[in-house]
Image (tube, rainbow, N blue to C red; front, side, top):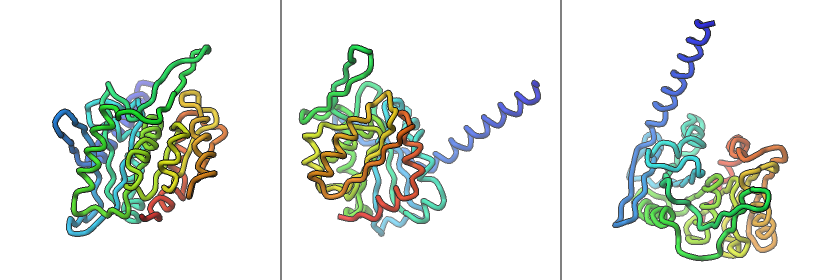
Length: 260
């Protein structure tokens, strides 16, 4: 029994070490402009040539990955973009910024209903959060690099990052060629600001952390006023609908097929 436990322990340790070594392929970076600062991890294409121009994808993590270690934000999605087939088929720059523990990507007010469930009140306007303000500056800084293809700039995120994705779309509606939001939400009044941006929305039908109604409402509104919206509801998925979304064989082909 002890021998089996020892084998399992070494197996877990090896898995963690391999994961950490893989993530080292994501270079560490930081953006600092006065009081605005944010850390990020960036994955450059294999055989990166600064004289060429590349698509860029910004990915926003959820609230559980906030912090200042500049690592946790890679927990969900980080491995996807390290796959050899993905790197060869889509030679893009992939960036995972990290939201500080004391902030939030989106300008949303949270409360609880009579049953104790969280209620998300998505805002129509207002100043960006501390993290969003720094993120906006970081994005502008990255897009100023000579090796960025401005016709192929993408944004995606999950949970808090899904909410942040919607907010970035309304704050920078002329920047992104396409976007995806997983288990997020927004105020439907904001949909008019990003109705021309191709968008794929995902949510779990049994999500008890972020109600699927937030995604459903945006999808329905965009179907009325929008250019292109795809909505995938996983009936039996809870909050971790990102597992199903990342497994969608058409997600990246769909995303990278769009150009401005």
